[in-house]
Image 1 (cartoon, rainbow, N blue to C red):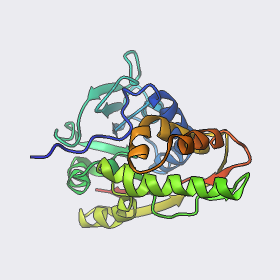
Image 2: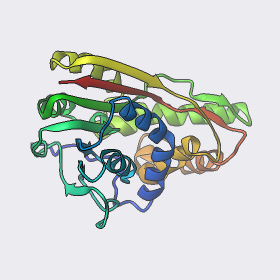
Image 3: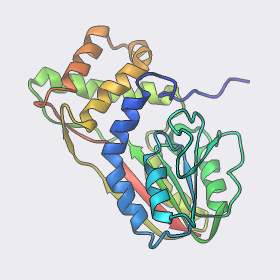
Image 4: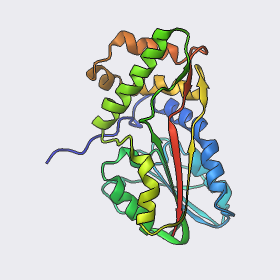
Length: 263
């Protein structure tokens, strides 16, 4: 039997720390707003799936207070060190049961789109909710093109668009990613019997040198071999990393679908 596709952006990679920082800067504001909308979280039991650098696990720990419980899981927990105010579990959601709950809040950001069994995993997450509990799933919808809002030259815009096309059509799918998944989550939650469904779609501009643009460079640094295998050249990838720091380049972040459903 063929091995399951590996995650494109491994935490063991030296570039992972920068990537986690950029993702936190790009998405934490939206995520905190969505989680705050769930009401008072004091004393609640929260599961943070694919916790990455731990920024949202820390936010949840502050929101739930000492009477609450926050469990942060990841397949690689190197950035979720000891001495934190939340629990840490090394865990593979693809092959292991959802950690025992029930849970008042389950949050998964930029996780399910990377997992080939994402639909079955969403079913298990929904089943792990306590009555009234909320499942919050946030993922990219990366098929919408034209991400360049401004560029120092037409050729630069073409190059960034080429990067985006190769990322969406070759690099991510080679690792089991479904770029259309985010737009399917709302219907999938309805099929699980969740109620009060609400989806917010978010994007904004990011000039070169800021997190949303620098993520391009981090992606290339972590998946350079994949981009080369898909036909890009070293010179093109080097130029993209330079452009990511050029304030004359302005890119639109990928559309982020933040979907909430309650048990």
